[in-house]
Structures are given as structure tokens and as C-alpha cells.
View 1 (cartoon, rainbow, N blue to C red):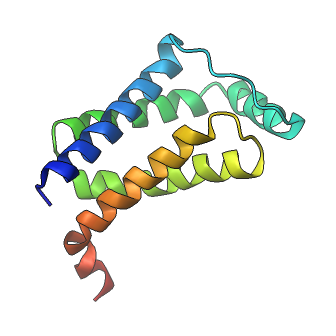
View 2: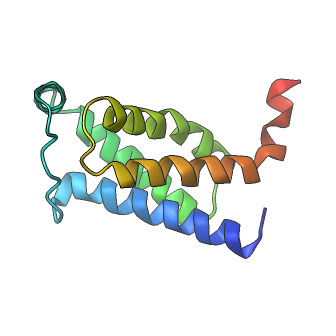
Length: 125
């Protein structure tokens, strides 16, 4: 669990979350619009709520910081799983734009969940 590989994966995932979370506030990287009308409408409606991307950005920043400082890592990984799956499914179903990042977040989260699996075993007893 404390191998160099696990540390690199944890830090990479933490940095990705921190950067993408901060980008929701400061927009230092303009994400390209999805190519489908359905995806564009979904994004527009979520933006219209004025809280969804704010909340998601805060969660991503908090989770990124917690991964970087190695606090509550098993909790963060499990809480991040549905977010990562929704990001991945959005890109699979609606928009292949930036799919590489969605796949990378899902893979890194999956690797770390596997590495921390001993912590989750009591949940299944």
C-alpha cells in the first residue's frame, strides 16, 4: 500500500483533481465544448443551476488535497468512485472530447481502490 507506485498514482490522481477542481473556479484551461447537442444541453442545464459545478469543484479540490497529504485516502477513493464513473460514462455516452482524462481518473481510482482493498474488506463481512 505504501509502495512507490501507489504513491505516484495517489499523487497523480490528487493533482488531477486539484487542477480540474480549481479550473472550475479560475478557468485557466478552457475545456472544449462537447460535440453532441445532448451533451451541450446537459452541460448548459447543469451550469444554469449555478451550484453543480461549484459543488463539484469544491469536492474535487478537497479530495485532491486529501490525496496529496495522504489523509482519509480509502474514504476519498470510495467517495470519488461514483464521480469518476459519472465522468467516464458522460464521455462514453455523450462526448469523446477529453475522454483520455476521464479514463485516466477512473483507472487511477480503480488502481488505488485495489491497492487499499484490505481497508474495505470489513464492509463486505
